[in-house]
Image (cartoon, rainbow, N blue to C red; front, side):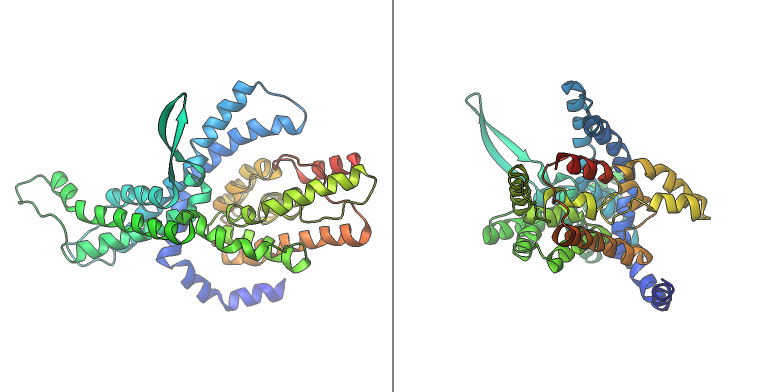
Length: 394
């Protein structure tokens, strides 16, 4: 550990330079602006899922109500993060603008949100009770669409900078009130930003058949086609944590490409178990309960470390606030509150711990003879309880 710390300290100037990068800084500050969404939605997600883990059945009306609150908070975090990222990036770029030329952060915020919707959301037509309705696929409005949110924010601010620097705006007489004049000045850059994002999405859909928000998932899917090996599990776990570390929802990018094989393996494990055999598949749907014990990055123990060993009152407070959610794999308060995202000192433990965990799990299944996962349990189930339940069933 001393060697790792010395290596990190040796490269600290590089890390500081990376940390001061305006793009990364905008992403980090954009996330922090959305922290109330994360904290509030986590509470209602726990209310909806936790009772079922311990065998308590809540009325469906309460579950639906909690899910509605979650969907309209975390479910639209991508849109909100596009706005907060654009606003913070605008503030950073304004310091580099020529004298007398300023970007309107309210306008860039709205333009980025509209652009994100164009990149991430698919409009569909459905028939309900004989009437044709136009609906939107909301799958990528939340954390799954964060990649699109960042791209939309940076494109938007870039277009605004291009237009404002070159006076490509609608100028009104000085007698017109400032607020009204500003709205007209923003028309051309606003239109340019949303049109560019719409064209990007149209091009990606024409070439790949999927919206822009799904292209990264589609590109990575072949990489995980034959992933049930030690190197394969390491790659999956590393990139799941790595994407989270740079501010992109890793599970939403990595897991969709391997979900079919994970579910098929788990179903096969169940059949082998019922036949009296040894369920030997390690790449299963609930392997994340081991690899991501406490959430992506295997952060279960981190709140305790913050509470017991940190001198900083702020870190102790983060540990106390996150210890209960992390116990049920809801670790966003820790990721953004500590923070662990974009924190160079956290890179190695955050990305490597999960890799070690899944390799140990595969070793125990392949060599020691432990049964692989056979039953699908809710993702919020604490790993010890899930493992105990699985052994009892075996």
